[in-house]
Length: 94
Image 1 (cartoon, one colour):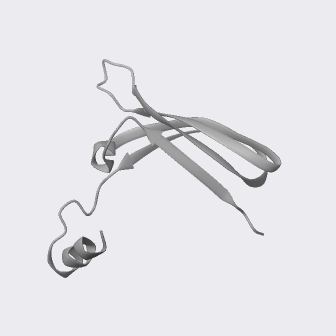
Image 2 (cartoon, rainbow, N blue to C red):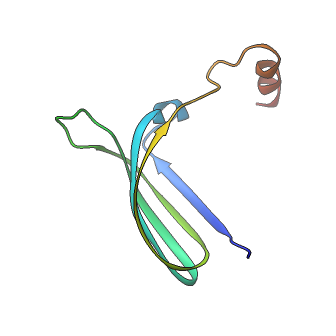
């Protein structure tokens, strides 16, 4: 079965490093042959405050069905300051 999905995420941050930590994706998808999905993204705040709105994600694809979801994710940047040979290769590429 061939599945095609294209998604775009927009946040208020200017760097991927700022996305570190816990986030919540709340959204849904619906389709009958072709579908569209949408999510609101919030960052986990202190226990005394509400989660902070940080962005949105939208997607389109080929598929059937209905989906409503709430997902908690944790973002960790694994290559902040690469060292050695891998770091040199990454510097050369980027």
